[in-house]
Amino acid sequence: MTMTPADPCAEGELQRYDVVPRKAHQYAMIVLIAAGYIIGSTVGAWLLFIAAVCMALGRFWRPFDPFRVLTTAIIQPAGLLPRRMVHEDRETRRIARVLGGIVFAVSGALLLLLPGLVWLAWTLTGLVGVMILLDAAFDFCALCLVVHHYARLTGNSRVPSGPA
Image (tube, rainbow, N blue to C red; front, side, top):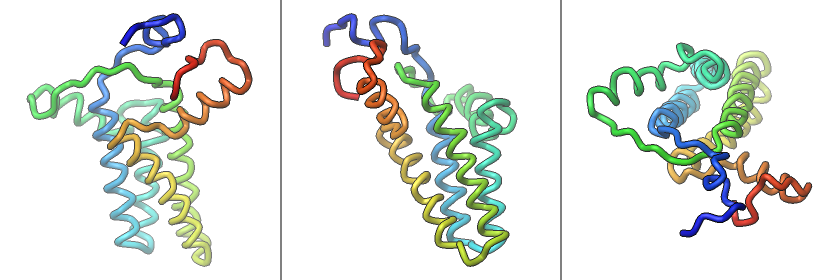
């Protein structure tokens, strides 16, 4: 693969990051929301609130994300999971993480306060859960794709001309 000026990695726009803590966090979120759905009722709503705190607040203050802390402080140093450094758009993923946390919080509130909208709460949660799973399993960031295409449509020259 040749590096061209349109390649964001060649221009240094995308830094290399260890993606293992992100993926551990994402798989933990999938487990939390799946457990919430299976258990249901009030416990399910509280599991969504825990996921919301890990996603939204953990974005700004690392101790609120115990899964990333566990991965970086214990699991990786013990040699149980290797580091995997890749170029990625971390800023857009951070925005997606906060938005996902907000959706989980709203869904948890719907479950507790409006039992007639249980279907809406789990539909919203499921949509975000699918996006988290796609990113965790296949490195497909849905918001990154949307931002990329929006920037290309608006003529933003910082966006590479190749596929997202």
